[in-house]
Length: 245
Figure 1: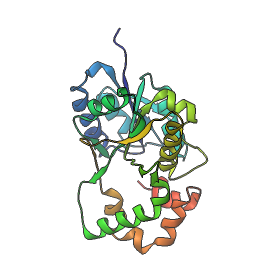
Figure 2: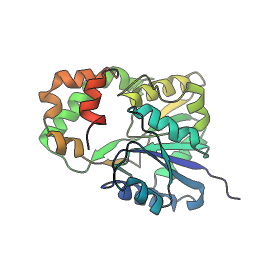
Figure 3: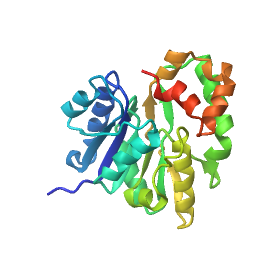
């Protein structure tokens, strides 16, 4: 029996427009390692569309978690993972073809506890660029740790490291990803390991939030943005994440 090396976990809330492209990118990238060493887990969250059917069509394992808590949705998928290495990516994002190769190289080097990847939007505008800069500046205290930058977009780590730090914090309704990155970084530092960022690979992510709300929305509504940055504001998170689509 072939051993699963990678488990890719994808949270999905009504993602029929995007999930197929996301899965095709993962399958394409798996050809550069060993396709049968990669399992794909889609965690359906309150889906009322064809997300689950599309995921099953591409051979993904589909789980269900209907909590209004992205941290809990992510944890459901990672806890069920059989792979030694876990990769998390959002359903509206695409990994590039050498992602698994680069992740495996970094982790097997013995220098990294895990890490992330840099995102690129599928379209760009002045508003998106300014909004991205605004978000980055406000998250800088969290994003800059261990003398460097804590990237997100697509996390990669050993499952044992996830278990050691207690997974994603389910008390948070937003920013659970940056919190996870910070704790993973601290955990690695205690063993002399670094938090890494993929250099050759990146994540192509949709600009749908800007399409839905407007390219300048985050700047024009700075009070809402700051409430989202607390990670604890249910109303703000619902209005921007959980009650959309």
